[in-house]
Image (cartoon, rainbow, N blue to C red; front, side, top):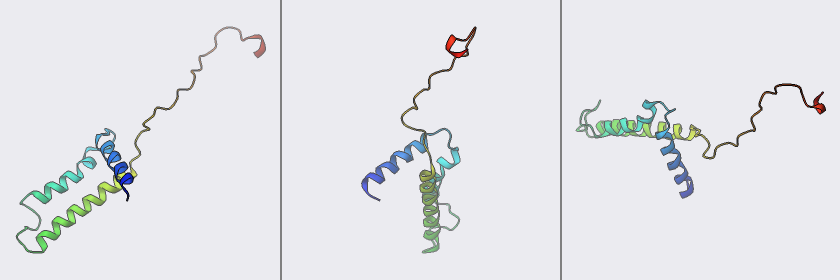
Length: 100
């Protein structure tokens, strides 16, 4: 991914996080993974040389894949509003001569 693609992904990520249509648990999935990594209480304690680190790496990588997939699937509303179509008012009374 080049710099422009990374910038677009970052912009889309911030729109994704701020969009009220996205469920809260999906927005917080990455934060929960980072908290799991930082917390001293894990499924496998970190003082176990390899297994303790592998579960942290597994949780972080799964959350990263989930967040990247979600942000790529996210379809934000258009930045520019669609042009309004002229309102069709109901006609009242007799129609004009050309429509008779």
